[in-house]
Image (cartoon, rainbow, N blue to C red):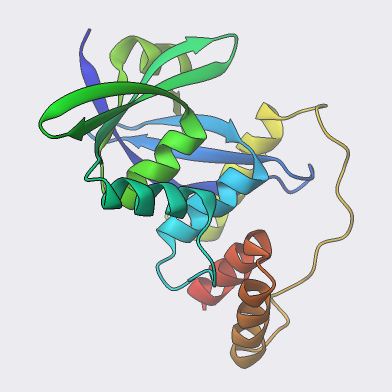
Length: 204
């Protein structure tokens, strides 16, 4: 079976469901997207790895794994999303130590969080992309595209979680206020909030 390389497009969170996140992966040589529902902690860990400016005061679990692996000369060479059963993706870490390759089973969200930290490529098999890949309409307006991704999450997580309460409106904040809120969120280790604030700062 042929492998297809994927890039991380981003993380989308639901506008109507609390704690619902989807990691959106892009087909490198195509237009299909592979949406994977992930937990809040994994979403935070991936967002921090993507946003280089957010530096947690203490290492997260995936940072600890990276530090541990570096100390013992273990390298994650690549991640392969190799199976899809009942909507659940299964992945493997391809690791190397002393020129000996090992394959380790991992949850897809954990595998991708580690791939980012090791700068390792992410692959899936063509038949999985054929089965679960979707096409999202290309829209030149970024905000519309983000809203489209949020709708995608809502579709994936429909009826699974309670509706969330009112969200804090960061659009009314000044840049200085946003930076202060970002520092406060990182200090409190509220990385979910920090990622949302960073998104708003990036839009400015």
